[in-house]
Length: 508
Image 1 (cartoon, rainbow, N blue to C red):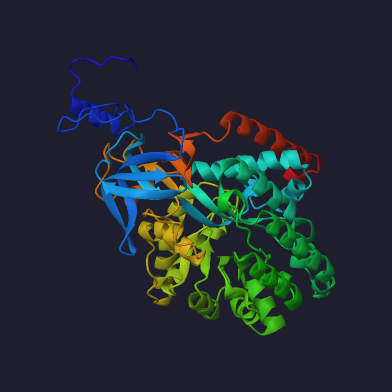
Image 2: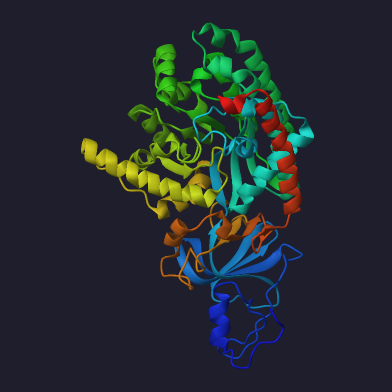
């Protein structure tokens, strides 16, 4: 692009082109002749700036609403001003012309390190077990390279907050190392039992394996508690570890009570797979004569924030417990890999039950915008099929419900009213998404821009901000070198693939 524009190019032309992001608005006069300060062509140097967007989902009078021509002032950690129209002054500006400004998106269920090592390998029906066992065996530096690749993808798609169930304490430590470097907001925990011990307990043929696992599980719980206490509140409160038991069918009353006690000490709640299949529900009913959520309730697991993922085997009793305690159901539409069965998780049933419902990543796909779309599309298909087959009246999920679940609904489940909202006094967690350009929009921002998210993907995300720190600017990761992250992630994951090849895994 040249520095000089043809004389015939009018201000209207400039404005039209800027909707596509082709030309930045630099010092153009307003309709009243007042010159605007230039919008920064690079991330602001301090956490004191204004984000100017074509539209924004703001939180007013206890509810979200879309406003046009939005300006949001960020100072340090917080949002300090919101206005329809321009905020006066010479403060730096982030140009989000043609973009929708949303609160930073919250995934209620991630396994951050496991996405790239399994993606493209499991879609044909192979188990993810062996790849993640090999992931666990990597030295810390290579594990960090894979974790960084996957966390970068989460940020790239607008996901600023991760309720993170790392698949072991080792992976939780890796996640925290990466998150602290990049100002990521994380609620991490190491899954117990972790990857190295999980499968013989989970896929046992009799309960003697569960009974025998108790001493080692107790040791894992304590090790996770000690680590969590050491980093709780780190990075100005961005790191808030939760306790993350694998599921009800891999714990005994004694081990689950130990998890709950540790969670109370930390104060950040519990995150688990809940009724994730009919098998878990059957085992829990057989062992404890209660549905999974009922059993956890009887032990006191719902005293603090509670996130339960998948819930494919949930009964009315499970939904009732979740609703009464304000637990969050994390629906993971791509959890089993692209096109696999996880898309049939009970998203419309959760909405019908009045349960706080979030969209989670799980693993394999880290594109949060894509998962919002899948939640709505698969959820509507599921509701129509069930309504036709059973005569029920399940609601058809909407993109508005998915976005609310990804923002203030999840924040309320975390008991964090300062998150998930564009409101004065809330933390400055924000993302902008191009809803006007090719393949997503119509050349301009439409009257209902949330609907354009159904045509978007993570590649349409242009800016990402957590607690005032700019992490993605104009579509480019700025907290680290994106090419180096990709190269190191590739080198590490190739070692897993090479081992799988040597074992004949791809021939199975």
